[in-house]
Image (cartoon, rainbow, N blue to C red; front, top):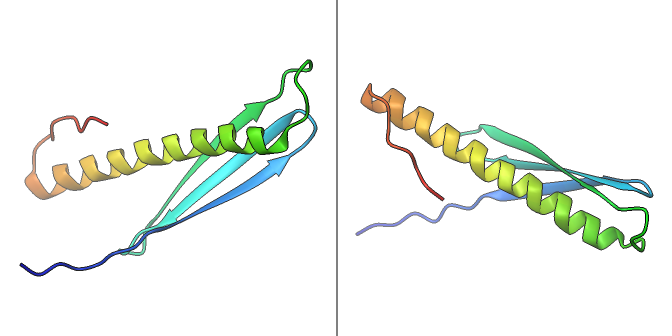
Length: 91
């Protein structure tokens, strides 16, 4: 059996102010396509200012959305190749 090593690089960028963190995620796939997503986090006014926590929450939300976008893309490719509607892919 022959196997091919394939790697994906995911980029995360953050924008922050005193109350909000926004994350943008991007993955470039070997076929040249890109999938993008976004996530947000808001700090409650009584919480201490912990930018790392906001990044973790916003980043996790962006990556979760990225996963859903990749599943949608996979469904579309299966449907196109098979000429029928594919069954749901569960995560």
